Image 1 (cartoon, rainbow, N blue to C red):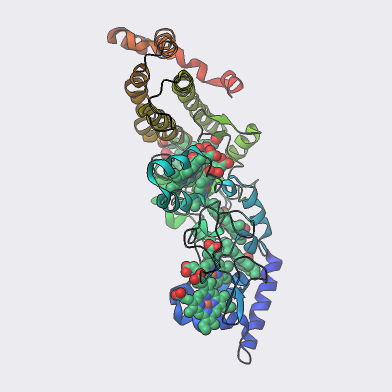
Image 2 (image 1 turned 90 degrees about the horizontal axis):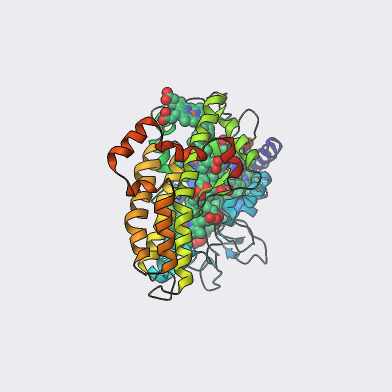
Length: 446
Ligand code: HEC
Ligand code: HEC
Ligand code: HEC
Ligand code: HEC
Ligand code: HEC
Ligand code: HEC
Ligand code: HEC
Ligand code: HEC
């Protein structure tokens, strides 16, 4: 990057020097766009790109044959600036982005979520909702002034499928035309997408001690620094970027956001990722800038146990019951999501169960419990099970009866309050949950 900077600066000043005689293509853009779009012009001119002589044409310039290229006042340009275009100067970032989980986010059309949006709502909201976060295929329309179909542009979804075959959009996090590191390091850069009832990372962060400390000390975060190593260049609090992307004493910045993630907590039943112990180690190394090893290990033990609690007590049985109902052929209506019980099951894992897991993962107690497992428990016992029993399917009833009678995590329903309180005080009741903690649990986990 350093060498590139020098080259770019050199090219930039050459362009400036020549401007007096013949306007270079880059400067021609400015003559119009300085007046035409003054806000955009100022964002660019104050940016590192503007300062380094990276001009409009360096990013928007297109080649003959590019599907989205159009003639524009004597130059061939394209509106889209894809990871491939940025990658001409930022190869490493483009490569890491393209192999990250983010790059795959546009491939959702076959998912249950997409089906639901299309049948229950309709196409406009699949575009303004799902595709605005996830990205979608940008379609070419030869009749449009910029050759991009209005249905698919604008779009800056994280896994956008570009006409040049590249995946993603760098401007999803790096707001144009400033493109600053300082901005991308802040939690707001992730918050367009990582929030809400099904993945409230932003709200969890705001609730956490980390968020508390960050928002009350933003001025001390050294956000403008070139180098940004946790513990050395800043230390008051971690942001989303700190834990998921930024440099530590041992790890370089990476645009592959999944490399420190050990679980997939999005799934109905949580799954371990490939090579998860390595990923866990990488995450723990982030913590080590500010916390001791025993503290960090203790945290992960509590978090993992909460994930297993959700999985073993609620997610597995609910999934098994749903499978039995589907197999019986007794659902009232044939289409997926046309029956009440399917929506209850869906919200159990996709909303409430995720909130519980995300709360526990990122130190947000209110999300772990009140928005999380409290809701899971209430709806499992008092919405899902009653709805499942309504079908009168013998296998389902037998499964539920056995679960409530013989599973020590559920048998409380049929016992009396005083005995249960005594067992809580003595520690007897908690014994049913011991199996969720410790090394043995980690080994038997999926
Ligand atoms: C003669 C004036 C002029 C020049 C020179 C010029 N532009 Fe434009 N440009 C315009 C106008 C007018 C629009 C349309 C603005 C609108 O729709 O509000 C536009 C729109 C654009 C768009 C958006 C297209 C879209 O709607 O998606 C891009 C990107 C763009 N210009 C880039 C450039 C680049 C890069 C250069 C230099 C190679 C350049 N322009 C030079 C006048 C100019
Ligand atoms: C560092 C690369 C870069 C530079 C330099 C750059 N742009 Fe852009 N520009 C982008 C990106 C990225 C987008 C969003 C397109 C996308 O999502 O792929 C964009 C979008 C646009 C758009 C259309 C979107 C809108 O908000 O209307 C216009 C117009 C535009 N740029 C004009 C310019 C002009 C004029 C300049 C020079 C002053 C310039 N750009 C410099 C990267 C750049
Ligand atoms: C506000 C932005 C946003 C909207 C709107 C949105 N999603 Fe998502 N979606 C996300 C984020 C962020 C994740 C990842 C959550 C996590 O890892 O906890 C996600 C996860 C998913 C997943 C799980 C992917 C996997 O690999 O497990 C699917 C499938 C999905 N979304 C599809 C959709 C569909 C279809 C819609 C519209 C009905 C939609 N999403 C609406 C942001 C959004
Ligand atoms: C998920 C959000 C996100 C996306 C998407 C993203 N970036 Fe970044 N980028 C960041 C963050 C956060 C930083 C700052 C990391 C740090 O310094 O701690 C950064 C830093 C950078 C830097 C500065 C690197 C350095 O070490 O000085 C460049 C260059 C960059 N990104 C380019 C890109 C390009 C090119 C793309 C698209 C291929 C892209 N980014 C996509 C979040 C993102
Ligand atoms: C023609 C080469 C070139 C292209 C194309 C280019 N950049 Fe840059 N970029 C640079 C240079 C030069 C710097 C300044 C490097 C430095 O500060 O070390 C820079 C710096 C950055 C930074 C760091 C800014 C900061 O705060 O320090 C980010 C982020 C970034 N670029 C993102 C992008 C994105 C996203 C794209 C595509 C939309 C892009 N760049 C396209 C050359 C380019
Ligand atoms: C434009 C929307 C968007 C933005 C902005 C965004 N993400 Fe994501 N993120 C997603 C979606 C969607 C997914 C799920 C990917 C999928 O469905 O394939 C995801 C997944 C993830 C994952 C899970 C990766 C894995 O391998 O399991 C992490 C971690 C993550 N994002 C972190 C971040 C961070 C940190 C930022 C900000 C610096 C950020 N994201 C910005 C949309 C976004
Ligand atoms: C103190 C460090 C820390 C901070 C700050 C942090 N996270 Fe996380 N994040 C984690 C840990 C730990 C996990 C769980 C990792 C694992 O699977 O073992 C996680 C998991 C995730 C996941 C994956 C969830 C899934 O469904 O599998 C996403 C997405 C994510 N974080 C996004 C964010 C966003 C966005 C922010 C900021 C609003 C943020 N994180 C702030 C540490 C952090
Ligand atoms: C940049 C420093 C920094 C990093 C990195 C960091 N933390 Fe923290 N952490 C703090 C601060 C500051 C507090 C608040 C301390 C207090 O309560 O006085 C805190 C508090 C906590 C708490 C206590 C929460 C509570 O509500 O009492 C836990 C648990 C925690 N961190 C876990 C982690 C884990 C796990 C990681 C790595 C994934 C991590 N932290 C990374 C600075 C950091």
